[in-house]
Amino acid sequence: MSDDEFLRVSDVSKWYGEEKVLEEVSFEMDRGDVTVLIGPSGSGKSTMLRCVNRLAEAQEGSILLDGEEVLSPDLDVDELRREVGMVFQGFNLFAHLTAVGNVALGPRRVLGLSETAARERAEAQLERVGLGEQFDSYPAELSGGQQQRVGIARALAMEPKLMLFDEPTSALDPELIGEVLEVMHGLVDEGMTMLVVTHEMSFAREVADEIVFLDDGRVVERGPPEQLFDHPEEERTGRFLERIASHD
Amino acid sequence: MASATRPATVRERVADSDRSVGRLLLVAAGALFWGWLVVSWVNRWLGGVLVPVGQPLVPAGAVEATLAAIPGLAAYASDAAFVVELTPELARGTWLTVVITAVSLAVGFVLAVPLAVARVYGRFSAWVSLGYTELLRGTPLLAQLFVLYYGLNLASYVPGALSGVFARDVVWVAILGFTLNGAAYQAEYIRGALESVEEGQITAGRAIGLSKLETIYYVVLPQGLRYAIPSWTNEFVYLIKYSSLAGFITVPELYYRADQIASETFRYTLIFVVTGVTYLALVLTASKLMERVEDRVAIPGIGSGSEE
Ligand SMILES: Nc1ncnc2c1ncn2[C@@H]1O[C@H](COP(=O)(O)OP(=O)(O)OP(=O)(O)O)[C@@H](O)[C@H]1O
Ligand SMILES: [Mg+2]
Image (cartoon, rainbow over all chains, first blue to last red; front, side, top):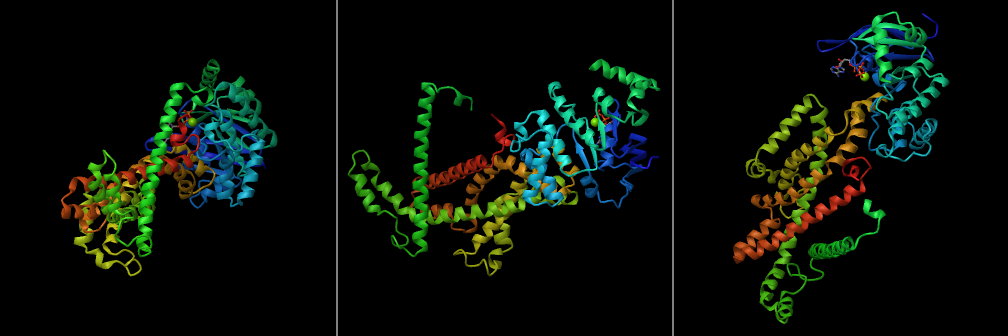
């Protein structure tokens, strides 16, 4: 356990009804780390992310974020979510708000900034993801890549200490993936702590400090990208990676 | 929208001008109708500043004489004069119809929004809301009015502040009835619209730290209410027509007055055609108004704004 430990997920288990979707999942991250969760569809990657900001409730285990127990029943969940940003596969932008409106809503209504301050912050975040020209566009008027960048700006505007990405590029046409990955690269360079679910293996290889391979709700194997990608210890990991590679 | 980028064909231009002539006529008719109503109401409130209270704005005799002098229209002169004689009563009745509809619709809306929210997002409150809407939508409106008026005798319990606003307190009973009933229908339309807002946006709202209620208020309602406008317009139109049921609990609105005059004069066809036209004018006004509202609040990607 390092001094700088920031997130410690220990033995987290979760059931949906009878179905056990997470089984004693454990991993940890230091501040500024990038951890990439990979695994087949239905393996529990999204569920794991959602347990971290309590969009899903884990029934067992512990998640320590910056020394605080996330799973504690006394925790102020809205406070937690202020500090943990989330980016969704389907963007999930607020359809009735412009790009600025989407990004400013949290600062305005959750952080209580003034209208002007919230707008300024939103504009700065949109500039940061390269959308300085699209302030007043509605989601329906933006490309998928632009929408996802608004989604990232919306999360960043809360000044989170941890960012969760749930397959941020999976819904995008191939030619639009690059612009989103570029923004994510930028965040890595700035030292943002990021927990990322993605099938973009070259991105994972480049930025991840650790890869966690989930299958059937269990951590099958984890380790630095070079080790896990090039010398997987488990047969299942190898098979999964081969399948992914043949899809690309 | 594509037609804007290429020159219009002759046929389109003819169609456009037809449309604009039709539109002009409609606007003129609307202006005449509302002008007549408003001037009639104001004249009555001010105690007959223009013409004595109860008199038509234009003398019926003059209308009859003018028409009689025009060949081809002479045959209609006496009917026209009769209709003109009716107008003060129609204007009075229409006032109540308009007020009852507008107030019931507005207050009903204020009740309907929380009912719909409770229905979609509540637990216990969802059942309460369901019970309420099913009860009010499942029983005849007229029966509801009878219960309020004859059964509960509410007309004699109208609070002091409201009593005397209308010549007869029973108007408040009608407003209450239509409000309670309309709230149930409006709630049902709004519920459907709320459900069409993507789940993912609610998740996103929660993920930035908005509470459930805040998410509903800032994310779901602004979209859901836009989606609800077309069906809500239907409710508006229904209410204009259903407000005639107030006549059955002796509210002297448009239908009630028409019925009374008809039973005194036996000119049923003429009276009810004119009354029908008056309702039609109210209905058209309502739907045009709501079209305008829908345009005003349109957002790309939401509701009718999403179709190119
Ligand atoms: N809200 C829910 N209710 C019931 N079951 C759920 C729910 N969400 C997920 N599951 C189930 O939990 C399991 C894990 O789902 P999860 O979405 O976490 O997988 P995933 O690894 O993110 O898959 P994908 O790659 O398809 O996104 C699946 O079997 C799924 O059917
Ligand atoms: Mg998933």
